[in-house]
Length: 165
Image (cartoon, rainbow, N blue to C red; front, side, top):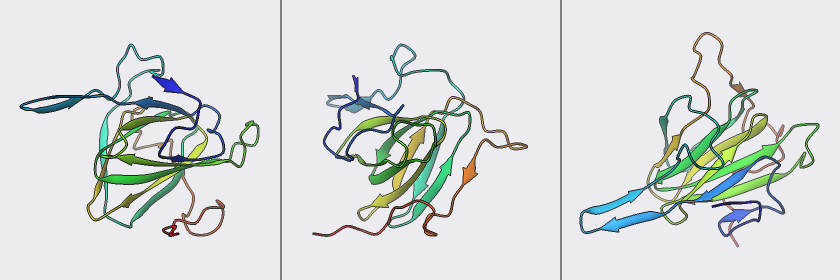
């Protein structure tokens, strides 16, 4: 199920244009559980590029970056992470919007991040966060479709600090 409404675990006025959310289902039995993340028959699926795992230690920010061609499919499989999106696309109806996703063991979702949307992540809690991505493109070592922005220089109007209160 994908939706444009802002579900629990997401801090945003509205979802950034092109961002999709899929609620993930756990199928448990006495041996453990299975969790499907992405299927070729999902309405949100475009194509397969590769699959990779990225780990972030607690409190570490990995980002900002964006792609010109690639769509990302992010799922957190262990721990909890704050995944933040910023719509810097000048021609987007949601230009300037920020979406925060608190996802992982307590909120099992997959998010679709379209090309041009800056994204970053930070493990929250006391253990590393493990992210699985199934992007639409293979990583090209000779000409990467990855463009970086410093997470702390103010280019993106977002503070990665913990928000107590």
